[in-house]
Length: 286
Length: 287
Image 1: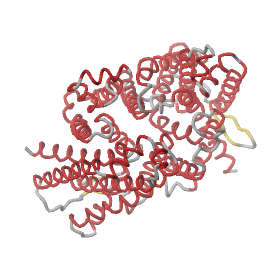
Image 2 (image 1 turned 45 degrees about the vertical axis):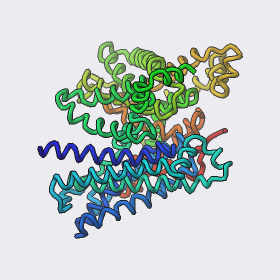
Image 3 (image 1 turned 180 degrees about the horizontal axis):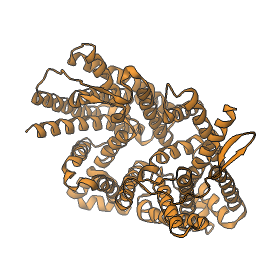
């Protein structure tokens, strides 16, 4: 049972993390290849403050605050560069973060920080906390999507210049998307640190940023249910694939490629094709 | 003296970057795909090069075969992987490319083993002293020379031959080029072939410099080449070349003077972010 609880907690944190990127990349159309940085910031804040004696629940908002603040600063980059340039800039932020962590002894350096703990909850309790947070974030995403802000995000993703012409303060909304998305990533990071009780620079590198982006894209950019399903499946995949052992990553990479090649709309696209075959095939022919 | 040595080191590294990134620029200029799997062709070239050299002892043949195999694999990648999803948003091609890269890296590991291959008797390992005492490996000098030659040849092809001009026309206005009777399909195939062959060429050089090819040798180029083409102002060949050399030198100096603060990647990307914030169109963008 312990194993299932732990797996469920991991999946739930992944879903929360993927939803936070979906807000930036899916809703607002701002691609990020460095999102693991904010998972890392959240994790390091809670770990260091926890070691300093602050109770777990008090560190959560601080994790979110710092991640969101730095996220807003990175968001400033999205006002300066777009699309592929933004992708590479955010990737750079990720490498910068890991590079700094690696060389700072007070942040644990290469070795990372171990023995993080003391959330004060049982394993089941912690799992429930993770699931509840994730459910709350999913609800928040659905709420934002339907709100005025969500509509503006959608407009920015579709056609930024038109939104500007309409008199919308585009920079403000972009920064809002970055701040909210990265703060939520910080929350995911805090949960992550307390779940694994060990963090190091390698836990927040380029690979993690790419993994979370692939969860969002495989789910179907912008679709909340799609991203939830994709993140849950992809995070559990390595555990389920234990039996193919050595070929785990090969299968993972292959699946990622085949999914994009044959269903570019991701799982959301697959689902709508399944439930609504006529309409989508007609769209495809256009 | 140290400064001169660092510049030399940076230029050697920069030449390798340039070879890899140039191929990527050719592809990017045409299709606007962030082609991460380009680095897999670099690894493929390195494996072919080492195996051919170990079997025949003929270095030019090793280079030629590595370039041809990488080039053909590049064309196959384009036709099977990218062509069908060209109309999709750029995220899709990016993730497909990342998936392809992971799968390729793992295939190398499964087929050739995790510990990699090396040359039985590595060629071009002699030492030469130049400019009053800076030591170079013969291979290091050759890689700079080779890069210069390849780039000169590429420049000549692009500006002086019909095929090259057709490629340029397609980059600047695909529809217009097509209406003048240029076959888009052919131009794309040629660009993928040439770009991937360059990656294969670079792969063999890296194999020579390190005397080792391993499945993961493409992981650093996979992202750093992206950084370089962005730094050079996406799609510009001259910009890419300059950016690669500048980045090589910046990294060489950075690791000496900032090594306590940041690691090599972080230095490269700190430089990239700084440049992009000051010049969002890249260092040498013409447009």
